[in-house]
Amino acid sequence: MSDRARLPLWEVFIRPRNGLAHRHVGSVHASDAEMALMAARDVYTRRGEGRSIWVAPASAIAASDPDEKAEMFDPADDKTYRQPTDYHVPEEVGDM
Amino acid sequence: MYAQGLINASGDPNAAETPEQLARFQARIDAEEKIEARDWMPAAYRKTLIRQISQHAHSEIIGMQPEGNWVTRAPSLRRKASLLAKVQDEGGHGLYLYAAAETLGISREEMQDQLLSGAAKYSSIFNYPTLTWADIGAIGWLVDGAAIMNQIPLCRCSYGPYARAMVRVCKEESFHQRQGYEIMTTLAQGAPEQKAMAQDALNRWWTPSVMMFGPPDTDSVHSDQSMTWKIKRFTNDALRQRFVDATVPQADYLGLTIPDPECKWNDVTQHYDIGPLDWDDFWKVVKGGGPMNRQRIAARQKADDDGAWVREAALAYAAKRSTQQEAAE
Image 1 (cartoon, chains in turn orange, purple):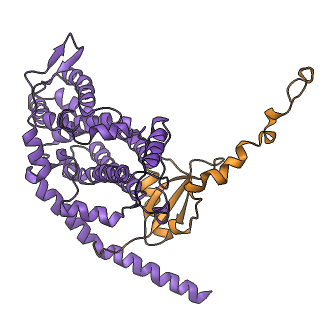
Image 2 (cartoon, rainbow over the protein chains, first blue to last red):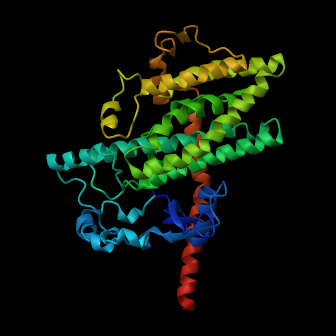
Image 3 (cartoon, one colour):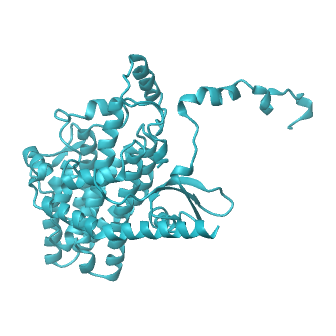
């Protein structure tokens, strides 16, 4: 393993244009937030892909465990009463 | 492209893989589900992807050199600006790919070390020199053309972060091929000397480009398993044929000759035939015997050494700033 200086990892989120949410696009290595923003601009917005950039230290992101996917998300699958299609509206009433 | 700290969170990578786990994994692949960074995956799948993605990243980074060679001597401001943008794109592609490889648990630093020590390979095409301006045209047209053929199916690769990186790369790559072909068109329609220069570049870049798809299917060590895992969607020979079929008519349009007397249309197969390729020469170049291998790695090493103080200074500045901020709070 080399002794090279290790630059921390930052996750990059870009808003393509106003009205849309920021979306994860990738990551960069940088010494601080300012440098991470500059690197993200050069790496991810060379063709007008963004109007706003967020960077966050990768280490600050907490994520759900894929091994617990079933416990986390399956309970939502059988709650069809949360869907509008679960309810009957008489045809005569029309669209609702 | 996902937080490095999250990797290996899903259990001990050395734990024995049960037949049930492997079967469940293959079932996900067969159902065209994408595998994401923290999902369980066989150690061999992880290893194959690290090898392939890092090699791909290294190829992008080393690929900046043969083209960078002509930035200062481009024949017009427009050509210079577009070549500079293309070289910058290659750097960007390398970074997307390094980031995708990092999601598998290898660090950027380890990959850099593997490249510089020769432990990791890169595309052998970049071990040839760019002798004339026409080489820049030929590289864009042929090398980027071949790369696009290879990369489009990779957009559907089973590993999510790799597939997403390839979508970005492919979008950008199309400008590269078009700028190359435009250079070739200008030269081919120019003075006899310019057309001769274009033909000379085609003569030198044709065979290495056709070889970019890797060894024939009969000799390709990694192909079968990669196809089963849907990392690869088409065999080396199938992609090579597709490239030849697309490129020969483009050469015809330019009035240039493919430097292969056996290259001709086959009415029976409805494809272009090509002559046998010298794979011994290919392996010689891959293993370090190409004309530029030494220079390529030396230049990469120099860039790395020259940048060391910048990285250290940036980190020292960041540390100082955060201490000052803490003191102020």
